[in-house]
Image (cartoon, rainbow, N blue to C red):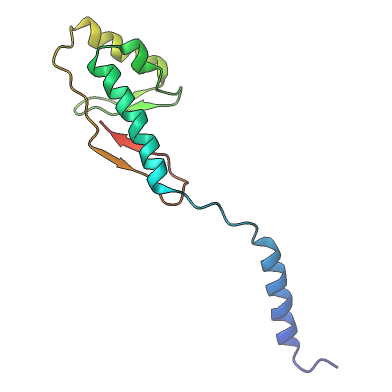
Length: 116
């Protein structure tokens, strides 16, 4: 009755997998995302350069981390706030924050990052 059962089996497997494929994730507009990250990063840098640390800390989420050269990672909004308070207590003259690198993942899966 079935001439080629393996062919029908493959057709069934294809139909099952095709039904599981789901919708493709939306494409990431890398240029727009990079522009948004750059604008936000420049706003943080401007607040830091103006010694407006209360303003600067508002840009960080509760799970944010700051990686400074030759220093341990500072994790979380409260710890970042303390870092700014420590900088203010030291006088912190001569700070000039600049954006050096922004990388946006094409997959949209990875978090945006900026190096200041």
